[in-house]
Length: 246
Ligand code: SF4
Ligand code: SF4
Image (cartoon, rainbow, N blue to C red; front, side, top):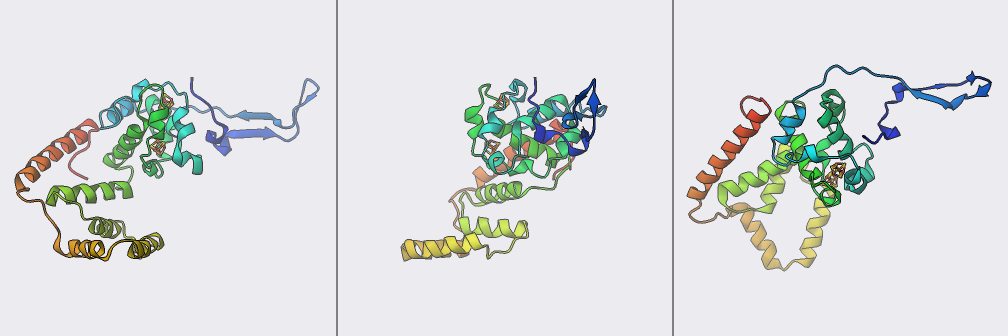
């Protein structure tokens, strides 16, 4: 049995009578509140299976709607519209249109995994959020999220060189997401580091941006990883019936 939260009811579906007397009892105002009925006919019967086929979504069928994930959720605490329990409910019923109303915030999961530790059914809601965001992208409902852009930049650099160079990851991430480099938090971070870090380390970080350090004899590993990534991406696209790459 799903939990019905008042915040989830659309305002246009809530009706109140300002003046209403029934059998001599005054039920005016909020005493007469009722929810207008809706008929849904556009169920997507494949949605749960498609999301379950993506990495992280495997255990979605175990959810029993207790709400512990939403109750523990870091993002829900600042934005009540971020509601993992509700989205899992919609996916399991195949209510795609309803889910798409929140398509622009689902990617905002910060992967803190508090929901995963709170879940009594081992659903791993964090994985389900990632799989759902991935599904939305593969289906063309959303463009690549900033989170995907960051993941691609990060893993792309590891695959290419066998190493991570943080400054380059951040710079390229800002370029991909069309953000200015002079972010206030980044300026504050660099100023803080400049006073606390030994000069030697700062120079080494600066040199790494220019030199691009690489792991020796990395080519064979790179080929193997690329092959594996292509296989997984093809399997993911096949799982949701999508064609070609992003
Ligand atoms: S991992 Fe995501 S869904 Fe889970 S508690 Fe953290 S922000 Fe919320
Ligand atoms: S905590 Fe687990 S079982 Fe409970 S609603 Fe969330 S995903 Fe479902």
